[in-house]
Image (tube, rainbow, N blue to C red; front, side):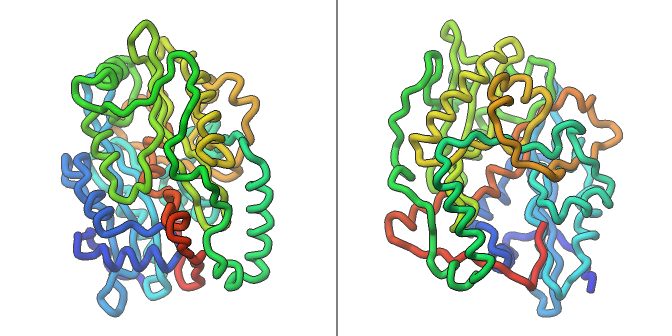
Length: 384
C-alpha cells in the first residue's frame, strides 16, 4: 500500500530510530538526529531533512534522509542533496518509488545523488532518472589490507552466521582489539602533522580559501562546516585528521574515521576526505602513507576509500596499483539539474556523500563494559 509522504519533523525521530533498529542499521541517538536536523546547509535553502510515510497506526513506516551540503565553484555558492537510509516496511510497500521521485525532484540543488547505494537498490536509482557516475569509477571502492587475519576470521564468522544466525548474533561484538579507542602514537612522514585547529584564522582556513580558487566544484570544507561535523554527538571518537605542509603552508589534508559495519566485521579506517591543492597533488601519496601506517597502529584491518574518481586514481599514484577493488556494483548515482555546472569540475570523495553520518562508529562500550550488541536482521523491511 503506497501512503502519502510528508516531511520529517523532530517529533518523528523516535519512530525513525525504531525503523533503523528494525533493519539492523546503526542507530543514531535522539541528540544525533537533532544535530543532523540542524544542518546549516539544509537551513540555507529550507530543504526537508527527509521524508516519511505513516503506516496504518499513524507512525512512520518508511523513511528517506535528505542530507544537504553546500558547494563552492570559485565565488559561486551552490547546494547538493544526497539521499540516505531508505527504509520501507511491508505496511507501506512500494513507497520507495515515491520517495525517490520526491527526492529527485526537489528544488534548489544542482545535483541529487547517492554515493553509498547497496547492490540490491542499484536498479531502483536507475529507474528514477539517476545515472551511474562517474562513468569510469562508479563501481570502484579501493582498500589496502594492513592485517589479513581479522579479515579471514570475519569471513568465517559470516559463513557461520548464514548457518545459525541467532546463535552467532547472540555472541555479541567480535574482532575487537586492545588498540581501539586509544590515543595512537603515530610516526608521521615529514611534512605531515595532526590537524585539530578549525578556527576561522587557522592554517586550515587559509588552505580552504586557496582550495576554493583551484577552479573545481567542491563540497564545503570551510572551518564552520568542519566544526559542525565534529560536533556529531554519536561519534565514539573524533576522526583522524592530518595536514600536509610545504614551506610552512598547508597544501593538503586527509580525514579518516574508524568504523565497524557490524558485529562480525573487523574495524576499518575509512577515508572520509583526501584533498590537495591542484599544484600539490604529490602530497596525496604522502598522506596515504600516513593513513595506512595509522590504520595498523589504531587497530584497523584495512584502510578503505569508498568513493573514487578518475582524478583520485591519478593522484593516488602507486597506491592505485596496490589496492584491492571492493566494488562490483554501481554504488554512485547522480541526477544533475539542467543548470548544473560542468560536471567534469567535480571530483567527489566520501566527504561529499553520507559516509560521515552513516558509518557505524567503533562500539567502544563493548570494550569498556563488555556489552553485547546483537546483529539484527529483518525479513519485514527493505532498505536501500
